Length: 214
Image 1 (cartoon, rainbow, N blue to C red):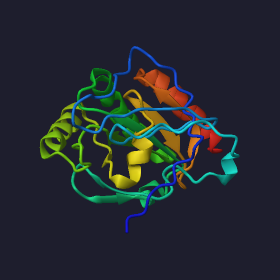
Image 2: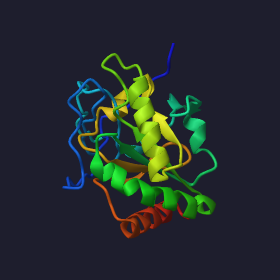
Image 3: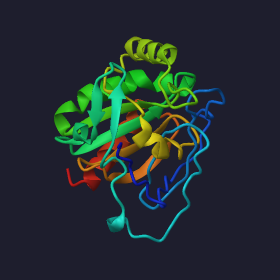
Image 4: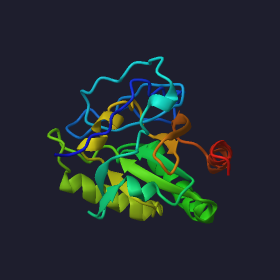
């Protein structure tokens, strides 16, 4: 039986809705929908999952949002929470193939992935609209996503969400949404809704690194 992430009821994302973000897809692919929490978090799953409300549960009692999951990459390889090990900070950028702001910031994210590689930071994409209504990957959408990654130079890992991540995806109301986790999959800081310039991402990443004590 597949393991599922226990998505905390208090995944408050601390989101600022910007013109640099796209609304979720309305077609058959998995469309995101979001909600916020004191520590901030983002997620991705087919539409229809209600976003959890805020609770007073202390953060210490909550499981890490990416502490246990299985998924695949765009290359078809298996991925799980071990991809976080060895990194002080992982930046997870949830994007969609239809989203212009997502695509426009991906070249900068590709550069940042290379520039921060020796600083204990990795960047990971999570593509939110490659699933059909039944939750299975669409071969056409996977090919489109792969072409986008190649053309934008976003040559960092990209997660194709599996069942374990549907609850997380179901909390994202706009793409791109970006959140940070530590090596144990626990969220660091607040999620960011909307695209950013490279200089802004540097400021945000450096602040997140300080939060994990690096």
